[in-house]
Length: 132
Ligand SMILES: [Zn+2]
Image (cartoon, rainbow, N blue to C red; front, side, top):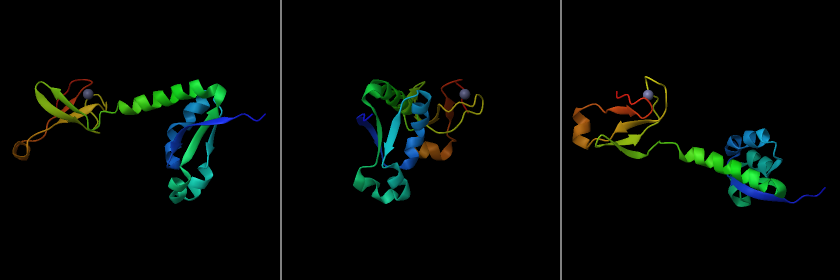
């Protein structure tokens, strides 16, 4: 059997593949990480050889693309650094965990320099609507 493999994604760091590999294993999709050994042995060459190529069989292409999309969509959902407005105030997404519900979709109030100097920054949890 000599099936053609199609590259559907490239990685510049070996560690990036960790997010994807388990999903392909779960879905029972055959995949091959071309040049993974080369890159993990010497990350400096990654750029020169075009990174690690995630390859799948042509017959699995659609399923593989669906998995990639799902992973990428989840990543975009991260609210870190996202600017939002609550009750007329400007907030920006943080990586803090809500003290009440433990969720990570939290924001901190964006204050002007002087206001921030005199009053503590308020935090807001989007999930349970707690302010602290
Ligand atoms: Zn909360």
